[in-house]
Length: 125
Image (cartoon, rainbow, N blue to C red; front, side, top):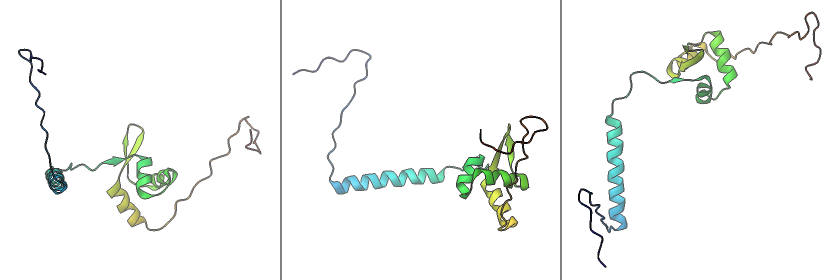
């Protein structure tokens, strides 16, 4: 059977079949992984630390997002991007080390008056 002619200007695609033993394949993969890790390690890292959202910081510290909010109100450093606070993990860890083992205090939200002058005794709706 004859292959169809390749049109002028079209690039020919080559197909190669390589036969390797299991040991040769293992060495080839190990070498490729080693090269990839070396290339990644030689890349310059960003001098600016990544900023985390409140939920990302909570996940990284193993606490609730509400606790992160309370710590922010107590004076934990953050940078606002628009209206959203962002946190540096290194700065937060330094703050927590300096702060010690104190817990945060959840404050009760003030009672809302649905009707002015009338206080609701039940939250059930």
